[in-house]
Picture: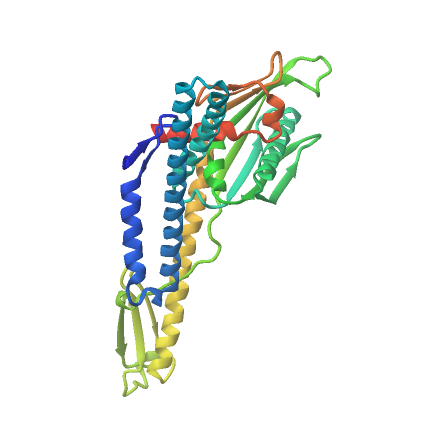
Length: 357
Protein backbone atom coordinates (compact mmCIF):
# COMPACT_ATOMS: atom_id res chain seq x y z
CA UNK A 1 0.00 0.00 0.00
CA UNK A 2 1.29 3.45 -0.88
CA UNK A 3 2.04 5.57 2.17
CA UNK A 4 0.20 8.45 0.53
CA UNK A 5 -3.11 8.09 -1.24
CA UNK A 6 -4.15 10.96 -3.50
CA UNK A 7 -7.91 10.96 -3.89
CA UNK A 8 -8.33 12.03 -7.50
CA UNK A 9 -11.93 13.01 -6.85
CA UNK A 10 -11.08 15.81 -4.46
CA UNK A 11 -7.29 16.17 -4.36
CA UNK A 12 -7.07 15.35 -0.64
CA UNK A 13 -3.93 13.53 0.47
CA UNK A 14 -4.15 11.14 3.41
CA UNK A 15 -0.66 10.48 4.79
CA UNK A 16 -0.57 7.05 6.44
CA UNK A 17 3.05 7.33 7.61
CA UNK A 18 2.50 10.60 9.49
CA UNK A 19 -0.59 9.31 11.28
CA UNK A 20 0.96 5.97 12.22
CA UNK A 21 4.04 7.78 13.52
CA UNK A 22 1.93 10.13 15.63
CA UNK A 23 -0.13 7.20 16.95
CA UNK A 24 3.09 5.43 18.04
CA UNK A 25 4.23 8.64 19.79
CA UNK A 26 0.94 8.85 21.67
CA UNK A 27 1.15 5.22 22.77
CA UNK A 28 4.65 5.93 24.10
CA UNK A 29 3.37 8.97 26.04
CA UNK A 30 0.52 6.96 27.56
CA UNK A 31 2.90 4.22 28.68
CA UNK A 32 5.04 6.66 30.70
CA UNK A 33 4.76 6.97 34.48
CA UNK A 34 2.74 9.96 35.61
CA UNK A 35 0.57 10.07 32.47
CA UNK A 36 -2.57 10.36 34.59
CA UNK A 37 -1.17 13.10 36.85
CA UNK A 38 -2.79 15.78 34.69
CA UNK A 39 -6.35 14.65 33.85
CA UNK A 40 -6.97 17.45 31.32
CA UNK A 41 -3.83 16.66 29.30
CA UNK A 42 -4.55 12.93 29.53
CA UNK A 43 -8.07 13.42 28.24
CA UNK A 44 -6.83 15.48 25.28
CA UNK A 45 -4.19 12.90 24.32
CA UNK A 46 -6.64 9.99 24.57
CA UNK A 47 -9.10 11.88 22.39
CA UNK A 48 -6.39 12.46 19.76
CA UNK A 49 -5.48 8.76 19.85
CA UNK A 50 -9.10 7.76 19.24
CA UNK A 51 -9.47 10.17 16.33
CA UNK A 52 -6.27 9.01 14.61
CA UNK A 53 -7.03 5.32 15.18
CA UNK A 54 -10.54 5.73 13.77
CA UNK A 55 -9.23 7.52 10.68
CA UNK A 56 -6.67 4.78 10.06
CA UNK A 57 -9.34 2.07 10.44
CA UNK A 58 -11.63 3.89 8.02
CA UNK A 59 -8.83 4.27 5.50
CA UNK A 60 -7.77 0.60 5.67
CA UNK A 61 -11.36 -0.59 5.23
CA UNK A 62 -11.86 1.74 2.28
CA UNK A 63 -8.62 0.60 0.69
CA UNK A 64 -9.60 -3.06 1.18
CA UNK A 65 -13.01 -2.44 -0.41
CA UNK A 66 -11.35 -0.71 -3.38
CA UNK A 67 -9.04 -3.68 -3.92
CA UNK A 68 -11.97 -6.13 -3.69
CA UNK A 69 -13.94 -4.06 -6.18
CA UNK A 70 -11.00 -4.07 -8.61
CA UNK A 71 -10.75 -7.86 -8.37
CA UNK A 72 -14.47 -8.22 -9.05
CA UNK A 73 -14.25 -5.82 -12.00
CA UNK A 74 -11.26 -7.68 -13.52
CA UNK A 75 -13.10 -10.98 -13.13
CA UNK A 76 -16.25 -9.64 -14.79
CA UNK A 77 -14.26 -8.30 -17.77
CA UNK A 78 -12.22 -11.48 -18.10
CA UNK A 79 -15.31 -13.69 -18.19
CA UNK A 80 -17.53 -11.20 -20.05
CA UNK A 81 -20.04 -11.51 -17.21
CA UNK A 82 -22.51 -8.63 -17.58
CA UNK A 83 -24.27 -9.42 -14.31
CA UNK A 84 -21.02 -9.31 -12.32
CA UNK A 85 -19.97 -6.19 -14.23
CA UNK A 86 -23.19 -4.48 -13.16
CA UNK A 87 -22.55 -5.50 -9.55
CA UNK A 88 -19.00 -4.12 -9.71
CA UNK A 89 -20.29 -0.85 -11.18
CA UNK A 90 -22.81 -0.45 -8.35
CA UNK A 91 -20.10 -1.15 -5.78
CA UNK A 92 -17.82 1.40 -7.45
CA UNK A 93 -20.57 4.03 -7.24
CA UNK A 94 -21.00 3.37 -3.51
CA UNK A 95 -17.23 3.53 -3.04
CA UNK A 96 -17.11 6.91 -4.79
CA UNK A 97 -19.59 8.22 -2.24
CA UNK A 98 -17.59 6.65 0.61
CA UNK A 99 -14.39 8.28 -0.68
CA UNK A 100 -16.11 11.67 -0.78
CA UNK A 101 -17.34 11.24 2.82
CA UNK A 102 -13.91 10.13 4.01
CA UNK A 103 -12.18 12.98 2.15
CA UNK A 104 -14.55 15.49 3.71
CA UNK A 105 -13.85 14.01 7.13
CA UNK A 106 -10.14 14.66 6.56
CA UNK A 107 -10.81 18.22 5.42
CA UNK A 108 -12.66 19.06 8.65
CA UNK A 109 -9.50 19.25 10.74
CA UNK A 110 -9.55 22.95 11.63
CA UNK A 111 -9.17 24.13 15.21
CA UNK A 112 -12.90 24.84 15.64
CA UNK A 113 -14.41 22.47 13.06
CA UNK A 114 -15.56 19.90 15.62
CA UNK A 115 -17.47 22.51 17.64
CA UNK A 116 -21.16 23.35 17.56
CA UNK A 117 -22.16 26.17 15.21
CA UNK A 118 -23.93 29.43 15.95
CA UNK A 119 -25.83 30.66 12.89
CA UNK A 120 -27.19 34.17 12.35
CA UNK A 121 -29.48 35.09 9.46
CA UNK A 122 -30.26 38.74 8.70
CA UNK A 123 -32.70 40.05 6.12
CA UNK A 124 -31.28 42.52 3.62
CA UNK A 125 -32.82 45.75 2.42
CA UNK A 126 -36.25 45.39 0.89
CA UNK A 127 -38.64 45.07 3.79
CA UNK A 128 -41.17 42.24 3.68
CA UNK A 129 -39.64 40.53 0.62
CA UNK A 130 -36.22 40.18 2.23
CA UNK A 131 -37.70 39.25 5.60
CA UNK A 132 -39.74 36.46 4.00
CA UNK A 133 -36.57 35.21 2.28
CA UNK A 134 -34.71 35.23 5.61
CA UNK A 135 -37.44 33.02 7.06
CA UNK A 136 -37.13 30.63 4.09
CA UNK A 137 -33.41 30.32 4.78
CA UNK A 138 -34.14 29.76 8.47
CA UNK A 139 -36.41 26.86 7.55
CA UNK A 140 -33.79 25.47 5.13
CA UNK A 141 -31.11 25.32 7.82
CA UNK A 142 -33.57 24.00 10.42
CA UNK A 143 -34.43 21.14 8.07
CA UNK A 144 -30.73 20.51 7.38
CA UNK A 145 -30.09 20.24 11.14
CA UNK A 146 -33.01 17.82 11.43
CA UNK A 147 -31.76 15.71 8.52
CA UNK A 148 -28.30 15.51 10.08
CA UNK A 149 -29.68 14.45 13.42
CA UNK A 150 -28.10 17.51 15.05
CA UNK A 151 -29.57 19.43 17.96
CA UNK A 152 -31.34 22.73 17.29
CA UNK A 153 -31.59 25.53 19.86
CA UNK A 154 -33.10 28.96 19.23
CA UNK A 155 -31.17 31.89 20.72
CA UNK A 156 -32.84 35.00 19.30
CA UNK A 157 -35.79 35.63 16.96
CA UNK A 158 -36.84 39.01 15.57
CA UNK A 159 -40.10 38.77 13.56
CA UNK A 160 -40.67 40.81 10.42
CA UNK A 161 -42.99 43.80 10.19
CA UNK A 162 -45.66 41.99 8.14
CA UNK A 163 -44.21 38.57 7.36
CA UNK A 164 -40.96 36.64 7.71
CA UNK A 165 -38.16 37.59 10.10
CA UNK A 166 -35.73 40.46 10.44
CA UNK A 167 -33.10 38.26 12.04
CA UNK A 168 -32.64 34.95 13.82
CA UNK A 169 -29.80 33.30 15.71
CA UNK A 170 -29.66 29.63 16.61
CA UNK A 171 -27.23 26.82 17.35
CA UNK A 172 -26.61 23.59 15.45
CA UNK A 173 -25.19 21.04 17.88
CA UNK A 174 -23.36 18.00 16.58
CA UNK A 175 -19.99 16.59 15.51
CA UNK A 176 -18.31 18.99 13.04
CA UNK A 177 -21.37 21.26 12.93
CA UNK A 178 -19.24 24.37 12.56
CA UNK A 179 -16.92 22.62 10.10
CA UNK A 180 -19.84 21.95 7.79
CA UNK A 181 -21.80 25.16 8.18
CA UNK A 182 -18.88 27.62 8.04
CA UNK A 183 -19.03 27.39 4.24
CA UNK A 184 -22.56 28.86 4.34
CA UNK A 185 -21.31 32.26 5.50
CA UNK A 186 -22.13 34.90 2.91
CA UNK A 187 -24.95 36.58 1.01
CA UNK A 188 -27.79 34.43 -0.34
CA UNK A 189 -29.88 35.77 -3.25
CA UNK A 190 -33.46 34.85 -4.16
CA UNK A 191 -35.15 35.57 -7.52
CA UNK A 192 -38.91 34.94 -7.76
CA UNK A 193 -42.32 36.38 -8.58
CA UNK A 194 -43.22 38.43 -5.52
CA UNK A 195 -46.09 36.94 -3.47
CA UNK A 196 -46.54 40.37 -1.88
CA UNK A 197 -47.00 42.35 -5.08
CA UNK A 198 -50.25 42.14 -7.06
CA UNK A 199 -48.50 43.20 -10.28
CA UNK A 200 -46.71 39.85 -10.42
CA UNK A 201 -43.29 41.32 -11.11
CA UNK A 202 -40.06 39.43 -10.61
CA UNK A 203 -38.25 40.44 -7.44
CA UNK A 204 -34.72 39.89 -6.12
CA UNK A 205 -34.14 39.58 -2.36
CA UNK A 206 -31.00 39.22 -0.27
CA UNK A 207 -30.19 37.83 3.17
CA UNK A 208 -26.86 37.30 4.90
CA UNK A 209 -25.82 34.19 6.77
CA UNK A 210 -22.99 34.21 9.28
CA UNK A 211 -21.65 31.14 11.09
CA UNK A 212 -19.16 31.02 13.95
CA UNK A 213 -18.09 28.34 16.43
CA UNK A 214 -19.67 27.96 19.84
CA UNK A 215 -16.85 28.52 22.30
CA UNK A 216 -16.46 26.46 25.45
CA UNK A 217 -18.33 28.15 28.27
CA UNK A 218 -16.15 26.64 30.99
CA UNK A 219 -12.68 28.08 31.37
CA UNK A 220 -10.22 25.85 33.20
CA UNK A 221 -7.33 27.67 34.86
CA UNK A 222 -4.37 25.33 35.16
CA UNK A 223 -1.37 26.94 36.85
CA UNK A 224 2.02 25.23 36.63
CA UNK A 225 4.23 25.73 39.70
CA UNK A 226 7.25 26.42 37.51
CA UNK A 227 5.45 29.44 36.06
CA UNK A 228 5.20 31.10 39.48
CA UNK A 229 7.61 33.27 41.42
CA UNK A 230 6.62 33.51 45.09
CA UNK A 231 8.11 36.24 47.26
CA UNK A 232 7.55 36.63 50.98
CA UNK A 233 8.07 39.84 52.91
CA UNK A 234 7.13 41.52 56.15
CA UNK A 235 3.63 42.91 56.21
CA UNK A 236 2.90 46.40 57.49
CA UNK A 237 -0.20 48.25 58.54
CA UNK A 238 -1.57 51.48 57.12
CA UNK A 239 1.06 54.19 56.86
CA UNK A 240 3.83 51.64 57.36
CA UNK A 241 2.99 51.11 61.04
CA UNK A 242 2.94 47.86 62.99
CA UNK A 243 5.55 46.06 60.91
CA UNK A 244 5.36 42.31 61.49
CA UNK A 245 8.50 40.62 62.75
CA UNK A 246 7.89 37.59 60.52
CA UNK A 247 7.67 37.48 56.72
CA UNK A 248 4.01 36.57 56.45
CA UNK A 249 3.03 38.65 53.40
CA UNK A 250 3.06 36.86 50.05
CA UNK A 251 3.46 38.16 46.49
CA UNK A 252 2.89 35.73 43.60
CA UNK A 253 3.98 36.58 40.05
CA UNK A 254 2.66 34.55 37.13
CA UNK A 255 5.67 34.69 34.83
CA UNK A 256 4.00 33.91 31.44
CA UNK A 257 1.38 36.66 31.83
CA UNK A 258 3.16 39.04 34.20
CA UNK A 259 0.09 39.14 36.45
CA UNK A 260 0.90 39.82 40.11
CA UNK A 261 -1.26 39.05 43.15
CA UNK A 262 -0.35 39.69 46.75
CA UNK A 263 -1.85 39.43 50.21
CA UNK A 264 -0.72 40.58 53.65
CA UNK A 265 -3.99 40.69 55.56
CA UNK A 266 -3.55 37.45 57.48
CA UNK A 267 -0.97 36.71 60.14
CA UNK A 268 -0.33 33.31 58.62
CA UNK A 269 1.93 33.12 55.55
CA UNK A 270 0.00 30.01 54.46
CA UNK A 271 -3.33 31.86 54.56
CA UNK A 272 -1.88 34.83 52.69
CA UNK A 273 -0.55 32.49 50.00
CA UNK A 274 -3.96 30.86 49.60
CA UNK A 275 -5.64 34.24 49.28
CA UNK A 276 -3.05 35.49 46.77
CA UNK A 277 -3.56 32.32 44.68
CA UNK A 278 -7.31 32.92 44.62
CA UNK A 279 -6.75 36.44 43.38
CA UNK A 280 -4.26 35.23 40.77
CA UNK A 281 -6.66 32.57 39.47
CA UNK A 282 -9.46 35.13 39.28
CA UNK A 283 -7.30 37.50 37.25
CA UNK A 284 -6.12 34.71 34.94
CA UNK A 285 -9.74 33.64 34.49
CA UNK A 286 -10.70 37.18 33.56
CA UNK A 287 -7.83 37.32 31.08
CA UNK A 288 -8.98 34.08 29.38
CA UNK A 289 -12.56 35.29 29.37
CA UNK A 290 -11.43 38.50 27.66
CA UNK A 291 -9.59 36.45 25.04
CA UNK A 292 -12.78 34.53 24.28
CA UNK A 293 -14.82 37.73 24.17
CA UNK A 294 -12.25 39.31 21.81
CA UNK A 295 -12.40 36.24 19.56
CA UNK A 296 -16.17 36.41 19.39
CA UNK A 297 -16.00 40.13 18.66
CA UNK A 298 -13.51 39.55 15.84
CA UNK A 299 -15.81 36.93 14.36
CA UNK A 300 -18.78 39.25 14.71
CA UNK A 301 -16.93 42.18 13.15
CA UNK A 302 -16.02 40.08 10.12
CA UNK A 303 -19.73 40.05 9.22
CA UNK A 304 -19.18 43.54 7.85
CA UNK A 305 -16.98 42.04 5.13
CA UNK A 306 -20.07 40.40 3.60
CA UNK A 307 -20.99 42.86 0.87
CA UNK A 308 -24.39 42.96 -0.79
CA UNK A 309 -24.07 41.91 -4.40
CA UNK A 310 -21.18 39.52 -3.71
CA UNK A 311 -23.55 36.61 -3.14
CA UNK A 312 -22.22 33.08 -2.71
CA UNK A 313 -25.40 31.38 -3.91
CA UNK A 314 -28.48 32.28 -5.97
CA UNK A 315 -31.87 30.59 -5.65
CA UNK A 316 -33.92 31.20 -8.80
CA UNK A 317 -37.64 30.33 -8.77
CA UNK A 318 -38.60 32.32 -11.90
CA UNK A 319 -38.44 32.27 -14.94
CA UNK A 320 -36.74 28.88 -14.40
CA UNK A 321 -35.85 26.89 -11.28
CA UNK A 322 -32.20 26.51 -10.29
CA UNK A 323 -29.85 26.94 -7.35
CA UNK A 324 -26.37 28.04 -8.34
CA UNK A 325 -23.33 28.21 -6.05
CA UNK A 326 -21.12 30.89 -7.58
CA UNK A 327 -17.96 29.76 -5.76
CA UNK A 328 -17.80 26.33 -7.38
CA UNK A 329 -20.08 26.94 -10.39
CA UNK A 330 -22.44 24.16 -9.29
CA UNK A 331 -26.05 24.19 -10.57
CA UNK A 332 -28.88 22.15 -9.03
CA UNK A 333 -32.34 22.03 -10.56
CA UNK A 334 -34.28 20.58 -7.61
CA UNK A 335 -34.87 23.86 -5.77
CA UNK A 336 -37.56 22.36 -3.52
CA UNK A 337 -35.14 19.79 -2.13
CA UNK A 338 -32.48 22.44 -1.50
CA UNK A 339 -34.93 24.70 0.36
CA UNK A 340 -35.99 21.63 2.34
CA UNK A 341 -32.45 21.25 3.72
CA UNK A 342 -30.74 19.41 0.86
CA UNK A 343 -27.58 21.55 0.89
CA UNK A 344 -24.97 18.86 1.57
CA UNK A 345 -23.84 18.77 -2.07
CA UNK A 346 -22.95 22.48 -1.90
CA UNK A 347 -21.29 22.23 1.51
CA UNK A 348 -19.16 19.23 0.55
CA UNK A 349 -18.04 20.56 -2.84
CA UNK A 350 -17.12 23.98 -1.41
CA UNK A 351 -15.11 22.47 1.45
CA UNK A 352 -13.27 20.05 -0.83
CA UNK A 353 -12.60 22.78 -3.40
CA UNK A 354 -11.03 24.97 -0.70
CA UNK A 355 -8.76 22.10 0.35
CA UNK A 356 -7.32 21.89 -3.15
CA UNK A 357 -6.38 25.58 -3.27
